[in-house]
Image (cartoon, rainbow, N blue to C red):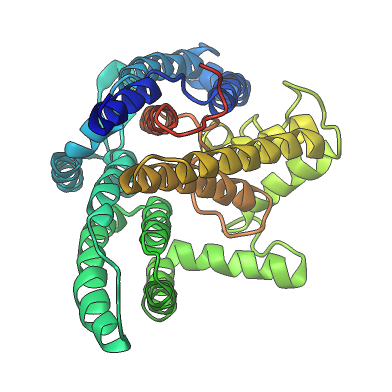
Length: 400
């Protein structure tokens, strides 16, 4: 048998592997338990507004079913073919981000959503996460980072590669920031930067990327964080809590974090028990009990023990996902897997960190545990792509 035919057969056998069972198991357990927490945290509000405690659960399950259907198709579709659609996907995303600024539904001063009637709303910024990861995986895999000197690194690395990268990510980030949505902007920028960092195998590339992040990224992030008065108030509240151990303005900007900490404190180590939260009864701002602050409800009901199990699950997800990325058959697969793992893990830990006062409140959703069709859909798509890549790896931990 010729080497070319043998290589093709090996590739075909790899394609028939099953996806990584551990990642799939974690995703299924989180999806099921997340739906239970969303129902538990939303039933009071749903009953008060719609006289139907199942209102938000039913709509969440609808998006889960749609997401699982799309994810199943993606799982059986070679990710290389998916990457070929990355440029059109990015263009469509930019168009949607422009349209939502012009014609989107305005809620609390933000234009982030398109109204779909009975299904609820969709948020183009959520789809931008996966579109940017797909495009960068394809684009970065084609770049050559082999700098022979500081001069060539500045000319090619900074003047060509970094500026092109900044233009791609910056255009998306600016449109999302105008909605305004700082949380999603942060997720996309951090994920993109880390993908750019790991795309090079050259010390000059690594040092230059980190240097650029400190001297360009951090000042821009600081300006974006304080340019809106409500963001500045959140930061002040956070530092007051961090430095003085007390909540500033508990009836104003500090109200949400105070209620979150009351709930967490009352939960203790073992929690009050599933379905026993008091904070879900309208104490948290608006609908955050089943959106941005579901983790706080979880800690109140299941305590430090329950929260630790979820944190451990995300650590396990990251480690296994990182291994899949390392064993990917090509650079674009490695970058794609790494981007998805970074995105979902960072998003999870930023949400959980904000809900225990480690960082300022940002409004970042917790994958699987936050009510929202767009978030649910893109999370399932991301998991499906990661499982797809695991089918092509040299050793994905499965037999067959």
